[in-house]
Amino acid sequence: MRISARADYAVRAALELAAAGDGVSLKAEAIATAQGIPHKFLEGILGDLRRGGLVVSRRGGNGGYRLARPADAIAIADVIRLADGPLVSVRGVRPPELSYGGPAESLLPLWIAVRANVRKILGEVTLAHVAAAELPDEVVNLAQDPEAWTNP
Image (cartoon, rainbow, N blue to C red):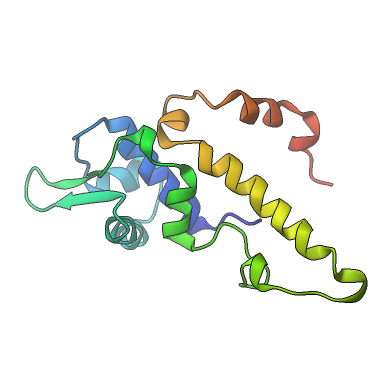
């Protein structure tokens, strides 16, 4: 799995909105500056998040962007899907749409298992978890494994 810059920026922008609190609007410029995201790129991402129903926007002096739902009701997976599409794909194809033969036949259940694990983590961790630095124990335990930090 590869996290694109677009998905990373989308999650970071959503976290800025989560940290601002319920009902608080932030200008795109403020989010871009706080997270070091190119402003024009962020505008496109915020537009996708708005069209997907994760953020709402308001024009004017007191306008800006805010989360459409509480931060504890928005999974990291929700943000990534709106920014980038499916969480896991193989050559741009979702795993259930693939088929293999011969010695590669067992690749399909492997890709499905990878997708299930990615979904489990990113689907259960919310913006509220990350913004409060209170990740679920299962995620903390996985991240504490020294092997998780090495690049083979």
